Length: 342
Ligand SMILES: NC(=O)c1ccc[n+]([C@@H]2O[C@H](COP(=O)([O-])OP(=O)(O)OC[C@H]3O[C@@H](n4cnc5c(N)ncnc54)[C@H](OP(=O)(O)O)[C@@H]3O)[C@@H](O)[C@H]2O)c1
Image 1: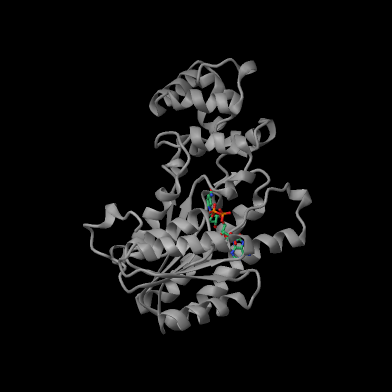
Image 2: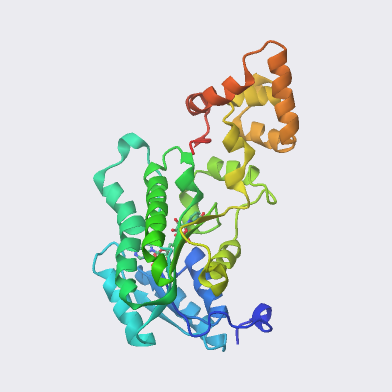
């Protein structure tokens, strides 16, 4: 039997709930499926690649081994196909009965490409999966959603940041967050909630394509332990979102990023070279990661005092620099990261 020690003394908060988790063959989705099952839910695991069938079978076995009333089925369906949503719901109802309680729209794909190279196929490749599929699947689930239903969309901190060469991905997640707010307004009267969980970088296969310096920057500017997230960091939040305890939260985006989204660096919009000066580094020797590393060791108030001191010494206005520097960072930095385009 699989180890379930953490849950042996906890009540099964999702007992008899039916949950569909898309893209649950691996990565964050597999973690979410297992976590919801640990709380007693019956899980529909969706995936698309034939090569993932073995992993899905193993996950189903792991869930069945929990021996807590949870069970699972796997459904292979390409969510870029418009027929996939109804096929998933039909298979869910056939296996688990007439109702669905939880839908986690997790399956997603990223694309790293400069603006000038983006094609209409690239756009469809990302948007058909990251935006249209959640729309079609939520529509297909809706007639069967038992109140209080939970729709949980997996976004990304990229939805509210600006990263070079990730515009199609980041904008698709921004679209998902827009859908989330509107669906929350539409479905609230029936007792359903609709929310986003928005991870920062998490070590999965999807992250393999993200530029290394972007990840390094995010690690350095993550307040909690200067690290990237784990799958478990995300699944804990999703399982709470799926539970009764989240009933008064809807239309929200919960940033699951160790605080990266509130990082002072992203909000101050200061130019790299000026930041270097504030950090006490010589302009000629700084690069973005160095500056961030250095600044991370300096208290925010002290940074502000240093800036104000420079201003009182007759240098260009500190506030003005904050306002003007965003564009300059984009032009001057060699890093693929552009800060603060929130
Ligand atoms: N990892 C991160 O750093 C990070 C950060 C922020 C947000 N996110 C978001 O978190 C979600 C999960 O990411 P992840 O890192 O766990 O991704 P991942 O490891 O690449 O897994 C992607 C999952 O989506 C499925 N999938 C891919 N294309 C599909 C399609 N056409 N139809 C149906 N399913 C499809 C895959 O199934 P197969 O195994 O069959 O291919 C797999 O189960 C995504 O929405 C992503 O944008 C991730």
